[in-house]
Amino acid sequence: MPSVMWFRRDLRLRDNPALVEAAADGPVLPLFVLDPALWGPAGPSRRAYLAASLRALDAPVAVVAGDPVRRVLLAAQSVAAERVHVAADFGPYGARRDAAVEAALAEHGVELVRTGSPYAVGPGRVTSGSGEPYRVYTPFSRAWAEHGWRGPVDAPTGVRWLGLAGGTTDLPEPALPDGLELPAAGEEAALRQWQDFLDRVDGYDEERDRPDLDSTSRMSVHLRWGEVHPRTLLADLARRRSAGAATYRKELAWREFFADLLAARPQTAREYLRPEYARMRYDEPGPLLTAWQEGRTGFPIVDAGMRQLRATGWMHNRVRMVVASFLVKDLHLEWQHGARHFMRWLADADLASNQQNWQWAAGSGVDAAPYFRVFNPTTQGRTFDPAGSYVRRWVPELADAADPHDPGPEDRRAAGYPEPVVDHAAERREALARWEAIR
Image (spheres, one colour):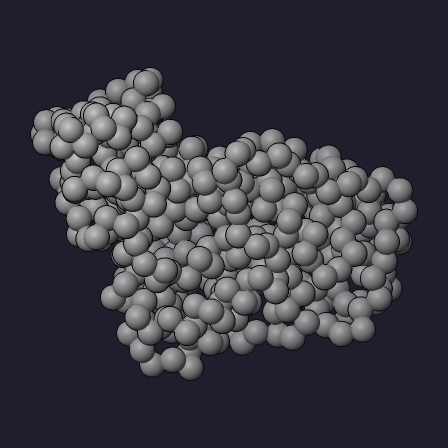
């Protein structure tokens, strides 16, 4: 019996339970729908990476563009499929879309079969003793680990792939802005990157906050597009007994915690989890937001991070926290402005992780940093980029500065580097005063 494998955030053949189920039915039509609701808001990094990942997928995937409700039904009918296989989507839009597709398919006698998800433990599976979703990471992570997950599954062999007669579209080739270079995409690239990181994972706990070192996994983009499943990573980590491997597993748990939170409270994709923070006085976006977006704030570590984002579609996690704190607490702008910019430019832009991390930085989310914890960008730079090599790489005009984290007036003039757009000490006091007003 023919079936459809509708790929979304699972662009791989290995450890793909939904694909295994589809192959068990018989011949498989591999399908990807370019959904305007998702393609439209995506920035150049996500568009280009998705296209590259689809090209790298080792299956003759049929790409169609348009409303998934219509396009999935037409694809199923074209091969006389009785079942469409997917990995479950727990995001706000994805869940609504899948419900609409399921209803349309059912009207024509076709079943939507959900098998697995992008997570080791699907959202909603880990709950507190009262049956409620967790709002604090630590008890969630303990329950998540105790719940456990099954091991990876092999890719199906001997699959008879079906084609889609007519109606397919050429894969887009989005033009990248000058200077933007993305990592290699695809399942094989993901596995190579993971094996390379395993050689360094034992030092992850001590070096992960150093943007000047090649100490992080760079796996976020591969996880975001499902070129590798977290089960595969967890299986390898289980064979390690180092503090670095344990710390990395905790980072995967954070990813699953945020997905669980968004599934339980979908409004937090746009709204404050802690509504009292919506009452805080914020400034209107203007030239300061533009300076932040373009890496022209005059604070070197902030500018380095924002320029790294534009150049690579990625930013080191410690620096993400620094630039987020700066936007909310130095520029007094609402976190949604920063979250939108990240979603546009990050190749690894994941709604759950992005929005919840921004709420964490803004003090309005779960396990939030206390609002009075305001990152000093100069101190952060000196602490985590002690030799200044990260700043010198991404803010090359400061390459010859005596102190790239706090260049003096002469170094700034010589480099053509701007003066700070705000006085950090003064804006810290202002941020705390605004916080006191809503307490």
